[in-house]
Length: 160
Image (cartoon, rainbow, N blue to C red; front, side, top):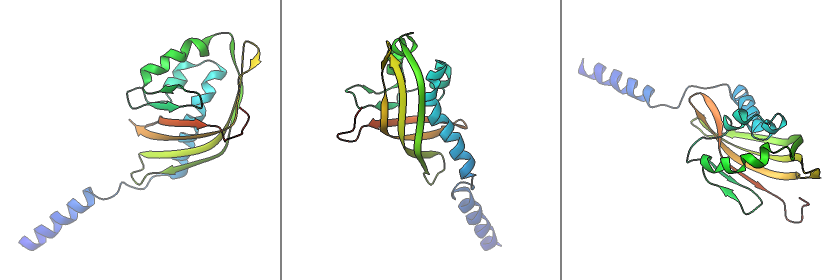
């Protein structure tokens, strides 16, 4: 009798510590792609709520750009708001090419890669990032995907 109880206990413990239940990767990839698109696409309507809802709103957020500026937390994001919201800054279009999304074994974290065209104007002059390499990490928090880390770079010799 003790052996049967021990086996039942071991089976119950192994179930509770096993990998998470399978999830619909394709559906989750679509949600992640939408969040990634929102990180740039929010500028179309200057919808800051959309942008802020797409990134981690805490100390974990980091964004590395081809410029010398590195944003190391959500509070630092706010420094760019006057520039983006200025009538001098205008969204034209953006496109993500070759978007790849890979999941961690937990299913709660994923990383992505794509080539970004981010076409804008500032004071009537082009302010574009074309053929920009974009990599990042997304995390599912409270049932919603957010970008926690991202890095943009230009290929050497690539026109900016």
